Structures are given as structure tokens and as C-alpha cells.
Length: 125
Length: 125
Length: 125
Length: 125
Image (tube, rainbow over the protein chains, first blue to last red):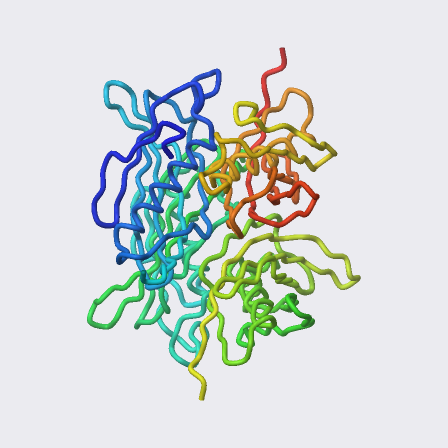
């Protein structure tokens, strides 16, 4: 995510927020964030949220996600919130929300999604 | 829905609950509700929830939905909750949740989904 | 599926067809098949298609699916075609298609979807 | 898309291919393409495919998409193929496929998805 300029702004068990500031690399000429950037931070927020509930030596992979683009993604930054809905031994399901945030703090939903992830256990060292 | 034995148990603007009691027609031999029945009441709950925010003379059609089946759907009945996330002029997006409910009131999430619907305006009289 | 009157009409490795004849239990007053019935046979066709590629002693569960309802589902019967896109050790991805079929054989696409399934290995007897 | 280094490699009515060469901006340290880049070109390929069937003075917006990540996205480039499944007056449904392509031409599926788009008619000038 760091290549996009994104950073984690909040971590709690089963919930992670990621913030992406507006920059030329991730916005279009009209100032809208690219759908690819919006989806990328949503996907990452869900992945990290799943990861917070995993034991050590476990990795996470996105199996699939679905996202509705609700409104043009505008703002000083966008914020993705990934929340674990169901944490199973093998599969995790997350809810994905993305908000456009103005400098004055006004937040507007811009995307809403749902994601399935799989846990991969690394062989113990 | 009535052919399945389902009924609306709650209506509010942007939110509708539908209850489906366990019956041989909608459950398997092991007592699990069929995935088709689970999806059907989820889809209907979202459709009615969208409808609560429409003007008169408007109909609703499901464009698409996605549902994760989280756990076997068991209980005395299952309850679907459709909640409008985004109500636009043409398109509506809903969140879909289904719970398995025991006789003692214990509720367990069994499915979680997301749905897109389109409003169709009927020609005035 | 048999409770709906559905039956498998074709099986090949990685592909299964399921046919559901029009009956009052699965159609609305206008003759359209219920979305729940359409989704149910699509889900089942994908599940059986995944199953054709499994070893013995393995079961299949639907993790999630997404379906676009393309047109009203009408016809003497509807036919669902489940096709394996990716068969992994744990997860399988299927494409789901449903057609409305008239008595004269005319076929019209009525739904298109995508499904993720998980393989469950039963303990050897 | 050009900010990622992507380009359209094929256009036909209802079908568009987009190619994205491997570059540091779109790949991870292990050489895998970022999921965000994979999704972005899939989304764009579907959008352009829909657009090929539109009349003049019409724009296209992605309503939602769902994508399964089938395998790590590796190769000299990745290629997304967007294909129109259903072209309606208001809504279009596309199938999305992404392949990892090696220098010797070997192609491997890395993602498979489904997308809903809406047509927006611009007021005539």
C-alpha cells in the first residue's frame, strides 16, 4: 500500500482503517480518486482486519471481493474501514467501507463491499 | 414469498425484516434451511427495504446480489434483515443479513450479503 | 433440489446442468420463475460441477455467490449450467448461467453468476 | 489507466483487452502484480467493453464488480479482457478475466469477475 501513499490510521481486533491522501498518482484530472485506488485500500483494510484475529505464523490472502461504488470518491483523503464479520478457522468474511473525507472532517460513503479471505498457515520455523 | 411461508415481521423506512419458519418445504433432512430459501428471503428483505423509500408508482427489481453463507442455517425460524445503504434516484444498494433464531431467542448470523436494485417508474394512471 | 422438482440433465467433469420445469410452487402469478428458485438451481449446478472434480470422501459447501438477474425468468423450464473455472485443493470457483427455455427450444439468458466453494474432506471410514 | 502504464491492446464490439506491463509501481517485491492494479485494469476493460456498444453522447460508470483472485498475478505483463454479457438500455453486465502472460506467450488465468455498469446520457450539445 505504501507505494500509493496509503497508511494504516487505526487498528483494533477485527477492524482496520486505512487512509489515502489525494495525490496526482491516485486521482483523476477532476480530483476523483481512481476506482482502482479505492478498491485497493478497501481490499487492504479487510486483509489487515482479518489478520488482527489470526495466530502467529499465519498469512492472509484475498479470495474474492465485491464492491459497490456509491458515489464519486472525492476529498482531501479517502478512508477505508475493514471489519471482520465472520472469522472462521480457514475463511474470514469482512465488510468493506470507503469514505471520502473533506478537510473539515465531513465524511461521505463512496464505496461499500464484502470480502472473503483465506488463512494460510506458514510451517513453523 | 408467501409460497414459502415467509412473512414480513418489521417495516421501517429503509429497513425490512422477513421471517421464515422451519417447514419441510424449506429445510433439508438435517433441519438446515435450504440455501435457496435463505437467499430468497434475503433478496426479498432488501427489495422491500428499497421499496419503503420509493415514491408511489415505482416498482423495484433486483439487479444483482452477492451473499456469503456464514454457517449452516438452523433454528425454529430464520430472519432476514434488509437495510438500505444507498438510495439513489435509479439504483439502491442494500445490506442483507440472515440470522438463525432458536425458540429461546438465540440469534446466530447465517448469511451476509449485498444487493443492487433498480427503480422502475410506472406510467402515471 | 428435488423438493423444487429440479433434476440434473447433464454431467461432465467440471460441468453440470440442472433443469427446473415451470410449476406453481416455483413461479409467480405472471409465470416468472421466482428469483429464489433461479438462484437455488444455479447454486446447486455450481456445487455439483465442483463435486465432479473432487476425490472420494470429499464434500462441498458454497462459500459465497454473486448473481446478476439479466431478464425475467420465463419458459417451460429454466436450465442452470455450472462450470468450474478454477479447481484448487481447498477452493473452487464456478461460473453460473441460467437460461429460460421455451417449448420450441429457444434459450434466453436470465441470470449470470460466479461462485466460490470449499472442499471438506470427510475422515476416512 | 495511463498513469499505471496500461494500454488498450484490442477493441471489438462488446470486448476490450487491456495490457499492463510489469513495473515497480504496480508490482510487489516478489514480482506479483498488486491486487489493486489487477482489479483496476479488469474494471477498465469492462467499462470500455460496455462503452463500445453505447450510442454517442453516452458515458459509462461502474455500479459494482466482484472479482475472484485465482492465482498470484505474475508475468511480463497482465492482460484484462472485458466482455459484455448483457447490454441493456440502462445497465450492462460484463465478464472480467485477467491473465498473467509470460515472455514466451504462456497465459495463466489470475482473476475472474463480473461487473455491472450504468449508462449515463449526456445532454445533447
